[in-house]
Image (tube, rainbow, N blue to C red; front, side):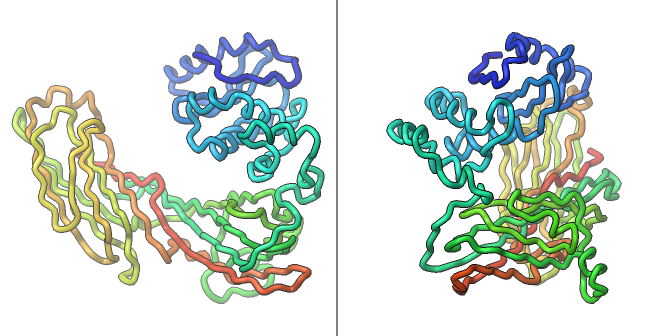
Length: 408
């Protein structure tokens, strides 16, 4: 393992300890016990994996999880693609960012938009940071700059829900949940205060209202701009928003979810001859909605060849490097059924048991629809100048970890 970047903040850990990390990680992989924290004596490694690179934090006492997470997010926003080449080409900027993210081992400025105000990739601007510190660093509202002005004041709200589903070979739903996030794109002048209202079950219970559908959210996480004390007292989501794009909150809904796109499959293997696959897809969501860019990914044996396909809609293709048939349907209306048949030559089936039985996976996106029924009831925008602002709301449901096991 080659170390690309390294910063010792407090000097209380011997940096040669990093040599033990890869050995310990490989031991965990062999034992099938992958853990984000690995200990070696009095030193602990907190790590995450991004593509093929490991971001590691060595510590002897308490360490917060975002010590690893934030550098990845910030570097990605700066360099677009976080690769070895982009890190090597921007060593000066990387170390400037590490020094601003942490001060003597303590988290400092973690918002990439604020960092971009005074740490840029242009060398002549790097010198400015040494003499002039942006007001956002010392402001109480460190995630937003003062003096912002827009000709047209707007807020775009995206409510995005991902469905995680696991269906066994008998067609029973083994596990399911919904992971949601509310993302903002704010283009507002001044220092406005926003108040967001949802059809939150706890809020309706507190106020004695139970009309209409409500949603019970779990594992709610907020952007640092949200006033947590206000939310805990009366469930009001009140905040001064970051400028531009940000994730306001995320949540999970632990509920039984009916698979929105149901898959039935028949896979027949004829010894040393061929394999025939029949897949039927049915939209189990309301007829007014349409799923876009649907992909049904069907595993096939690694030695399959000479593919032939027939589909009632969309098109199918063989992806040999991944041992998959990918059936793509650009537009899939609710309540509709479609069929795909595939035929492959199969020289041998000797390795069939060793290959296992990978599940069928499905990808899709359904606009203007949320499976949980969550709704933005209101968005109030308050700013001392009293300008009028337009809030826009969009709902999207998409596939998350969506797997259907097969008997074949």
